[in-house]
Length: 396
Image (cartoon, rainbow, N blue to C red; front, side, top):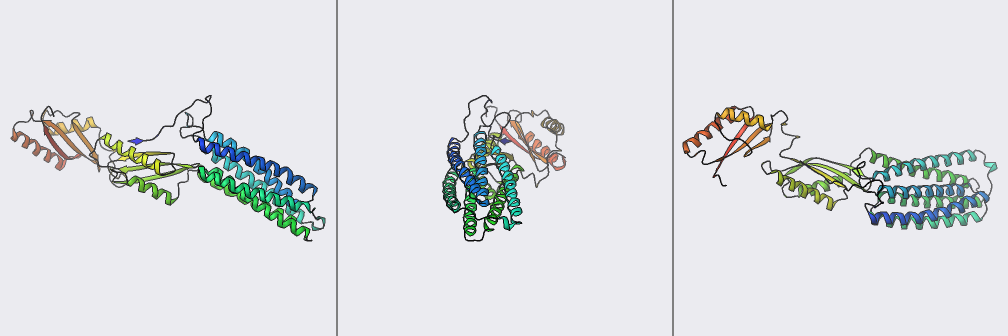
């Protein structure tokens, strides 16, 4: 028995409607702010670095350019990743964000390595290193202030809407601020007579960019290979499931990340003698509790009457029809064994409950004989380990 939510499907031609309007709007707004700032900084830093002879300022300008390109990618991922589930993507499009983060990480790592190599090659000829123009340090200070302010703004938005991709983008802005600080130090040292420090700063910026790119790429890759939630988050979900009335225990609790959310599978153990509808109710109650209390996209709950990881499997047992035929043959009577007979597949055996009408067995001796015959059957039968009789009036 399994419970799971089916997302709303939309045709590909339908108008775009984000699955999370608040997150989509906040991400779009903050990203456009970042695009505007990075566009201005790219033009300012690259031009000032080129004419002011500052390699570190030009490297930081290229860093801003990479931010501009990544912001455009974030806009794309935010729009397409927030679409509802459809026939081709039954779990939604959230991993578009993950794929965008992976691409961003690889691009940043490549850019950082390229800047590091360029700076290293220039450092091999220190005599050719020139003193930078004094204006470049003011441009670097402006960039530092802009990037730190952008980091604080974007991190606040990302935490409010709980978006992993936006948090990554915000910390990317903080790394930009750190790189701008390195550039300020490098240009300052250059102006003080240590001309090589500008190139050293450019190399450090390259290392910082590459490090951040590798980090993003590894985190995205971990999600794409279905890495589970942290041990603390898994234990919290376990506690929520166990707190559900009717859940005796659980096993095979599995999780996997899906962008800012997660998917959860669990096997819960309930009383084996309850009805199918009651078991379904318990599963749905457990599922809703997890969805309410945790950052989870969907929960699939499998109902078990016993711990199938511990007890004998029941796969070798015959079907209901074959079991009823076998039981009727052993009873040697014309008992009406049909829908009023309940079979419980437990621990590799069958527990049966026979519901009989009193009119069929009015004679107490006949009832006692039937009970005795059931006891004899369960003593040596290869399928049945318990048979319980229920006698009632026809109208009950």
